[in-house]
Figure (tube, rainbow, N blue to C red):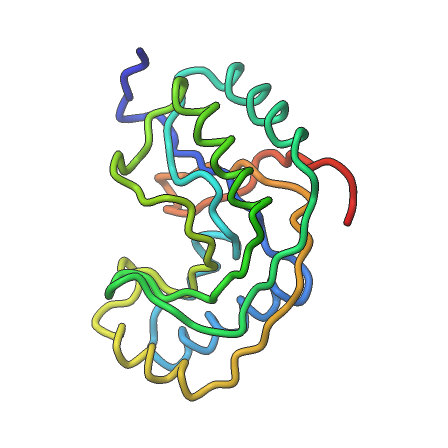
Length: 190
């Protein structure tokens, strides 16, 4: 069994939002930043939908083939990003994501195949709950309820997005931000 070293980087697997959905996500976080004087969330992490929450791994040479093999077995599929705002208690404000069973099956398959080779950051993380975080408690300050109230006054658009690849992201403790290090395409186009 692998034991985590304090210097080990954190990784996660996500669908990075691009196109109209990505631009819209950035515009909402920019509005929140300007209005509430908090750093825009996208400065720390690209707009995304998490498929595998943060984890460490002892051997990248094991991780990469497992991700590639698992992801390429699944077909690309459509999701709907937006249309509503939600929250997880007072910790996270997010843009709603409507994901089909294909997304849930992919997240489950990834969790199962990675479990023996990774250590999750939060050993008690919840099941796959697709969403696109707009603000997180670390960057919210005391503004959670005011942000939610403000967002409820805005018309919330929705966008179709094609989940055609997943990305492996790594967290840099120096910059406290996440960046994409590798992409894994899904099977086919929809």
